Each structure stands twice: as structure tokens, then as C-alpha cells.
Image (cartoon, rainbow, N blue to C red):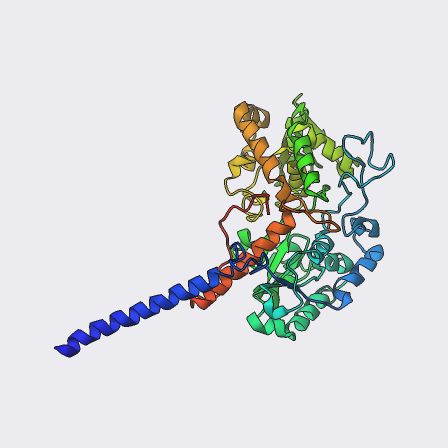
Length: 470
């Protein structure tokens, strides 16, 4: 009988010890989470980043090679000024095409290339407040490989082996480092400033397009920041979507506040607008339907790109239209997402999406999870079938609801822009800050799951990170 009594008590003690260990691990992990306030007073506790000093062939040499890029959309002047491109006139002062007067970057406006994020992010990281030279003290490791520029350098006129060479060499270099052996790369991240599809050649089954960067075993362990993620389609992956670079790059908190004031008070005579070409050869595209509805409405303006028209490539024209529109129509482009959606929101225009993957299944660290707070959704199937009038749909939204959406767009705007890398914001969080914070939280969650015996955690984070104060 005593033995029968002792055994249950033994099991109780073992169970209590087990849960005590679990609680200890949770508390230990929680104390180094980047979102916590450190009792030691160190604002960088849990936020230190170690940056690899890569051989220049993986980044700096690519910038000098821009002049010979096969892609006509990326030239040396487009990656000047720390990746921002050439400065522009302020929209309030532009009278004609950008460049018609003396250019000044005092307004924070630049002709930024949509695929220039590799250089912009690296330049911002150089001024990150919690850098460390001690990799053992770092929460995460940044790998400044310019994957997007590498794509452009070797996409056209090269075989698959040449297109994959730099990615494979990078993987070998990383795996030879002591920093890699600490966590098998799960605390590493890099920026590939294009869509994920450009780095998944074998997944999309188009042998002439892209590299296999995201399919390499080493890179699968890392976090890769792209401007459009594939995980919502293929169900898994290491890529996370961050905003496209826009034309606005503030230097100071005052620049951000002034811009918010301007777009909040802007006169918006157009109910809706669309910037883009019709894409008639793409049978699934609803752009011809949108353009037709816009042409039939006196409340809509279309800025075209076809037949030699170049307005949609002129930043001044684009920003003036977005700042004078209440709603900006954002159908799918070459892929599900568009840089135009971010330009529109930065201008204070409420985006109208037609497919969930254009925003709602992307940008989890930068956009509100309640999509109705800042945007309108109209299913593209309804537009394609002719069952919906876009204008009537938008006019049915109560004016108070429209004002609330506009205010939400103004509120989240700071987190959608990348500040000028040569300066530092004080209290405002930009897209870079939210991205780094997201990576830190993701890695902390992974470590927590591993310490608790749960293996590598899925890195989805449901929290709404749109607060724009540091």
C-alpha cells in the first residue's frame, strides 16, 4: 500500500518539476524578447544585430556593375544617394515633368527605383542604433547580399549555372562561418528586393526566369525579406514581404509630421484614379475593365503607360494624381502586388484592391490586420464579369467611413516609407524599423519553440505592428 501511495506522489513531483522548467524557459526567453523594456536600462537588450562583412562581389561590386546591367530599369543614377536615386522637386512645386527645374532633395523626394531595396536597406542598417561587432552578443545576423541586383546582372543572356553561382557561393561562405554553426542560419536574414518568384525558378517551372536562391537548403533556414512573398501561395517558405521603396524618404521626424499634415489636408477633386497600362495580352487581367470604367466616369482619371506614354514613369505626375484622389485603384500587375499601392498610401490615397494577395496576405509587419480600416476590397471576378460598378461601390461608402480610412492611411504612412539612410529618425518608426523588429520577434519565437522542445516554429506573427513611434 505505501508503494501505491508513493508512486502517484512521485508522478506529481515529476510533473511539477517539468512545468517549473517550462515556466523558467518561457521567462528566460521572454526577458530577451526585442519588444520588452529591459530592467537594466539597455535599450538594445535583445535587439543587437551583427552584420557580416561579405566579400565585395556580393554587394559593392554589383553597384559598380549597374552600368552594364541587362535590365533597362536599373542604372547607376537610380542607385545613387545611398540607393534612393536622383532627388526630385517637391510635388507642390513641380510644374511639368520632374527635372524641369533645379532639383533639390530638401523635400525628401527621390526618383527611387522599385527594385532598389537591397542598397537602401543595407545603408539604413549601417546606422542602426544597436549594431554590435560581437556576433555572440547578437540577436540576429544580417547578410548584406544584394540578391535583387545579382538577379538583374545575370538574368538576361546567361545560363542557369551562372544565374545561381553567386547564391551558391554565398551559401558556402555562410556555412563556413562560426556564426552559422550557432543556429544553422535560423538567426540570419537578408534582403532580396524583388518578388519571391524571382528567386524560385524551379518552383515556377520557367527555366529562363530567375535564380534558385530561396530553394537552397541554407537559405531556407534564413529569413529573406522580399517585396512580395510566395508563402501565401505555396504554403511555406522563409520569405516575408516588406514594403516596396517609394519616392518619399524623410530625414527627420519633422519631415514625417509635415508630410502627414500635407496629405491630410490635400484637396482631392478625383473620386478615384488608376495609374497603369491595360495589359491586353494578359487574359486574366481586369485592367482593361478598370480603364473602361474610368473612361466612362467624370470622377475618375487614368494615367496611362501605353503607346509611348511615359506619365506613369514620371514620379511628379504620379504623386500629384495620388494626392488629388480619394481612392486609388490597385489591380494586379506583373505579379499580385504593386509598388503603386505604396506610392498611393504615402500620398494619402485609400487603396482599392481586387485580389487578397495584393496586400492582405502580405506585409504582416506593416499593414493593419483589419483590412477594412485602410482599404476597400472589390473581388476581381465581379469586375471581370461586369457585375459591379467601381464608382457606385465607392460612392456607397458613408463619408464618415471614408474619412476614417483616410486617417488610418495617414497614421500608418510612416511605417510604409524608408527614411533617408544618411540621417536618423528619433521617435518615428519607418519601414526599416518595423522590418527589423519583425525579424527580431520571429527569431525570438523560433528560439523559444526550440528551447521548449517544439522544433522550429512557424514564424507567422499576428500582432499589428503599425504603430509609428519608437
